[in-house]
Length: 473
Figure 1 (cartoon, rainbow, N blue to C red):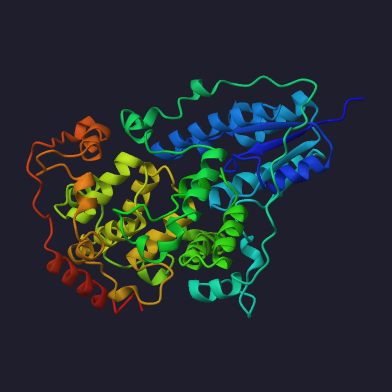
Figure 2 (figure 1 turned 135 degrees about the vertical axis):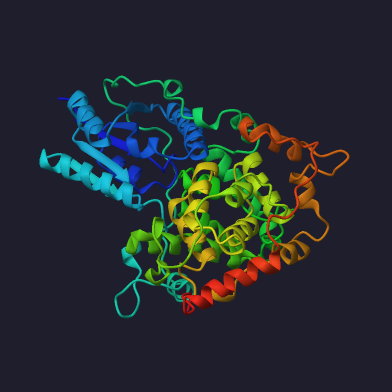
């Protein structure tokens, strides 16, 4: 008799290298049927993330074919689709890698219950993080609310060595029918922006490994300082690949740790940034409301402004504040934004413009190809002051002094702001090719005046904090 196959449900784990779910499946000796489901939760992704995920799925399908397998595509509610596939193939059950955002957890719990109710295997595995969020606890058994003690605990914890990818995957005797990826039109909402951003993405497992090697062979040495300079190629840019699981976090950790042991100057700082990502998921798991509501409930009565003309100017990269506008335009041209820029634009929106952080969070979710539910939520709430930080009351970044410090020669601004330049570069011009036509932006027009005086904006924010009894404290 033919051995019943296993269905491998891929989501944000588009790789064969160091994938615990795959290792467990191979250990059963069963034929394997890799599947990707375009379910309502995935349909709800923002325009850039959904487009980039589509590119990742296409590349992963090619990777599977090279390993003697294929990727079966189905559309619909995950539980219904997977149960139907089990029925079609006679599979013994389904395996998948865990996700931690509230929507994914609810979906996955439902899938597991539906499978087990029918006597089928429904099994989730680690793979997206170094440590599962519930395995890191304070001395009192609770979860960490501050990064530094979390780092002190995690840095000494064991991380299993990465497992190399198998050369071949065992295939079933008969493959189920697959839908066509192009019929899903996952990039439709990107419209003309897709052609611009496509020049900057690096898709797939092989590209991610090359990106890691490039970073650790040079830029890691100066990472301590260069990571704050948006005009310098001083970061790994692995966030794009990590968010879709095109490279395993354990492989990145061990490679960075090897660089640390050989004396690379910036390796420890890079390791801390990897743990910052872990900390974001730790918080998301233990306090899932961070994705939608103020992490600190005392901020619920804070007088945030809603959407309006100032927020729209921020969205369009037309605030008249060069550092803010350059960073926003970088996002439309490349699909990502330098981390220093993310801090500046978030602080400016939530403090100088007093606009609710959720407006910025939702816009990033729509525009970033490296959108990550945990990092986006924690980053925005950290910048706003409503999240996990000891003293956000006094942290109001001044974009003017920040740009003098981190872009003193104006290279970053010139790279993305065309107005006022006699011969603007390709990326500065590409901003006008990427954004919606309905914005009616024109590089020939003068650069806009500031929409808010920085000193007045800072004073207004501090007065609001003080008026609420120092909610940030």
